[in-house]
Amino acid sequence: MNDVAQRISLGQEYVSQQHAQIQLMRSVTRISPVAIVQHLFEYFAGTGFERHRHFVENVQLYAREYREFVMDMDRSDPDSPHIIGVCEGMSQKPVNPESIPVFEDTLSLIHDFNAAAIDLFLLILFLVVLLSGAYLAFVRIDV
Image (cartoon, rainbow, N blue to C red; front, side, top):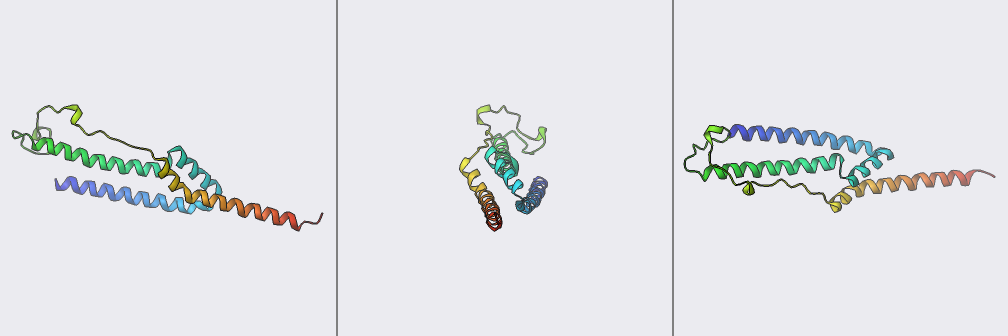
């Protein structure tokens, strides 16, 4: 079981590093108004990196819950050799399909709006600066 825990830990570490790199690049691209609009569309459409990160977290929670379910079902069978991960080493008793945990992945508009608030603020700031610059350029021209 130690090998499984080590593989899970390495996988989670890899995903964490990958997400950190993506988050860094998304922070750098916030310089561009086009990238900010793209991020806003992703937030409100329920797609993009933030949605992917949320989905991966839900999958990891479900995988942990499912592993615990399998181990609990195996422990409840006294005839099982209790060797998790090997088909012949686990319980052969049938499992009620309703007892298997169900994966749930939810979308939250409030969470998406909170995540998009910074990008929305930056886009409004870009717009104000751009319109102010255009107004000042127009005022300086002699007609």
